[in-house]
Image (cartoon, rainbow, N blue to C red; front, side):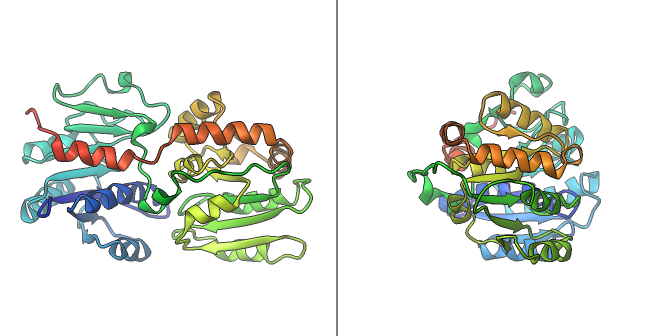
Length: 350
């Protein structure tokens, strides 16, 4: 593995968030632990995201083409040939069936990270869907050689969560400590609505920690709200130790992005919003299993109803205990390692 290189094609931005890149970073870290090197290929990478990746010892190359276009695929194929990569990992909703075919036609081994089955027919060697609602019938149109990796056994968690695998969460009778996290960008400023909801939650001694992601453009309005008297809120930006914050919280108000899997791994009871159809399907499945509490779309939720849900969960230790146990059972934190083992040993059947 000392000379094997993993090339990851993923983007981040205010509109699309940082989830695609961050979950691929988990795979990158596992590949590095196996002795390989990693290159990220990105279109107009955010400076903060570039710095984050470089700090983890991965290279970042810019793609000067429209994301998902033929030119994009050609640039990635050429970069892969120059670097002599072992695998190309593709993650993003702007990558389609044609993009996969063009990488395969260029002789690449391709892992395609997917959420919704919308990029068919699939030509990639491996298709990964880590979500709770992943099922084979989403991928009926695929090449004979395409292998499916489906479900929570393959959830990608970054290496900072590894030391917490055997940690045991305590469930207090009254949940007073709440974490608010709405993803890396939060373009609709759901964070501000969540903070307003805290003023409606009738929980004695309520404390809150609010995480503002690297791509959030609403920092000023959030800071103004947090600074108001009577609110016991700490604001965290560019968090470097997310597991510690999650461990502190008794419950979490969160958007159903990549952080959701981190919360479940840490056994933290989750009240979750779903912003789009992909998140809607994931949250609905998890809610049906009793793993999370579904708050619906943030635009259809008012501060009073969100505050009431916070108060109800805070006063229900039995429910929080059940949600915590189900979350820990759902996510074991070894997904990235499993995938790397498969990439190392996989023989492509062209």
